[in-house]
Image (cartoon, rainbow, N blue to C red; front, side, top):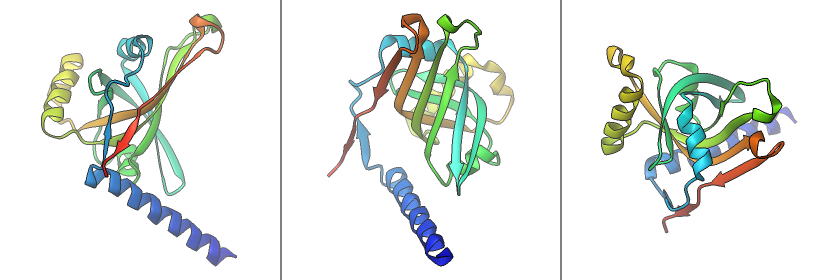
Length: 180
C-alpha cells in the first residue's frame, strides 16, 4: 500500500509539474481583458500596499508578506523578492499561487479584504519595464537595492466588503482561452 501511495504522489507531482511548465514555457494561455474586476475591487487593491502571498510545494505551504503595486491594465500584482526566499523557491516549482490583501479593523461593519489566485512569473520585456517603473514610483527606496520583480497575473478574486452588507462577496474570475 505504501508503494502505491508513493507512486500516486509521484504521478500527481509529475503531472502538476508538467502542467505548470506547459502553461509557463509554451505560453499557451491568453485572457480576455474585457473581463476586468469591478471598480470597487480595483480601488481597494490600489488603496493598499502589502499583500500576503501563499505558495506551496511538495505538500509544504508557506506565506510571505510583500509590498506590491497593482497594474490595472494587466490586472496584475507586482512585487519584489530575492531568488533565495522560500516563497520564490516554492513558486519556481509551482507557479500557481494564492494570497490576500486586507484592511485591519476591529469594526465588523467595516471589514474588507481580497483573496486571490494567480500565476506567478518574472515580467519580461515591456511588462518588466512597466512593472519596474510603477514599483519604483510607489516605493522609491527600492532604487537603492537590487530588485527582482515578480508578477502575479490574477485569475480569481473574491472581495469581502461588509460595508455593502454583512458577508457581502464580490467575485471575479478571468476567462481562460486556450490556443488551439
